[in-house]
Length: 323
Image 1 (cartoon, rainbow, N blue to C red):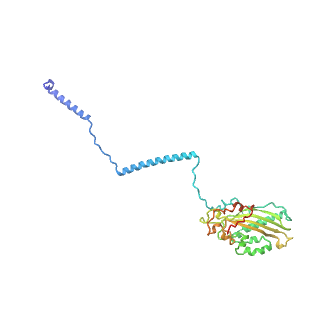
Image 2: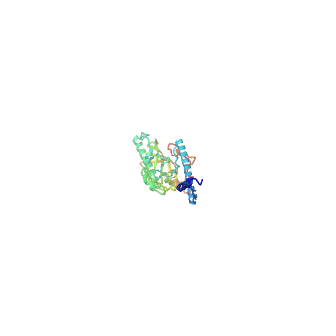
Image 3: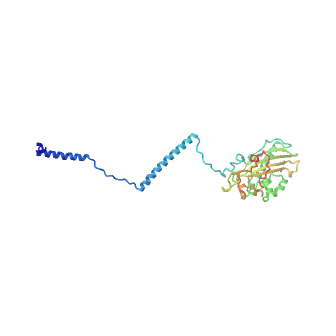
């Protein structure tokens, strides 16, 4: 084979060697080079951050599922979310709200009276004049500025007969006593709010002796006292009530003497609730929170019918409120 004519040709041998080298280069290009392996190592901070992101995604996903379930539950029930209960205290701008006096009229306007008609030997005009005199006496005793601010009974005295005025003047113009408190509303150191007391009640009339007219007043008065937020929890703490059943006697002269003609007091009784007992024992009206030695009451005693207590059409309660 070595003596083959082509092998003996120098040009052919050069050409063959050249082609062999080119083929070897192509074969080397087709053989893939081994790749060097680089290891990726995560730092400690990176691992913590990755873990935090994973946990956050899980929590947010769970929260979204729960919220979706809650929305579905609310939508199915048709009920709006319930607001938390709000504690309600005393609104000094509207002190009579949430009390029996909430719908009563202000002052003497709360007392109604029948139409004036002849009674006994009194004409219709005289009966109507008697109603006006009685309402003036009630206002002077329970509503007047002199009495509520200074315990001054002069307005009431001016409406009475001369003999009755002389009898009651020492009491109504003197110092505070229980007897004086029976005729007048006496306010102590705990002052009233700048709102008008409220009333509910009515007048009735009947004939007395000759020349005598008896007008009966059945009424209840509510007073609103000032207070600090720490002193009162409910309107009941600042609004005491005074219930009155009072006969007023109007006499004519003749047959009566001039000194006995006019307005006089007849039989009467009163009942007070929601007041401070310590002050009441001295003839003074004060809110029940003024009694520092007893807790602030939330309601009336269980044995007391509050509706009947303030209703002038009901019998006057006999239960003692202060013992």
